[in-house]
Length: 275
Image (cartoon, rainbow, N blue to C red; front, side):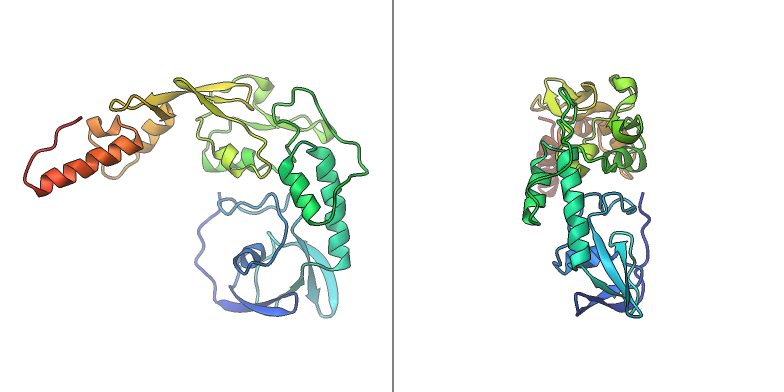
């Protein structure tokens, strides 16, 4: 998981001939995003250390009149750093990558729209379409879901399976996982919307992960199922100020109403009752 760093000293970087302020050591892609400079990317997630998997965020770094390509998500800001984001070489590299992704994830609207934005609407490569693919032929193997599950949640419920062109992401042996929290972190970080989950009755079903079923907590006030049971208990146990048991058994909405009611009654000198 990405470590919190003390901001470095202010520096000046040059992007496409224009100077911008940044903090020394700051990720260049973050600077570009902040300054609304368009650089396509798939595998960058602010809560994880960057590792340049998708290669779409390549830029050209200018040093002493020479240029070399680098991923902007792993490039750190330094005083005098100069980069170019739309040179002919970068555009050619980008177009080839989009063709590869159109073949790798032919059913992904995200990839299709992103590629079209950069002028790529067809691919010369053989499209990889698998019937019954749990990820709907939308996965580009960026690894964000695997990393979020392992590095952020500490669950390790999913991982890469097989090697080379047969590599996929799923649970070990495609079996329902006992380690999955049902947190949905994988769904939220997936850049191509490849992962599906659905709350069905008293369970959260991780449809993409071998239909793993995770029991949900039920609110004792409104009766709604609202969050994975084990995960909720774990979060509540870590609170600096523990919630009263009758409050802890409520969904966030009912909990908020109950706490507000308690505050109002306390202010009036009365006593709150559950309900």
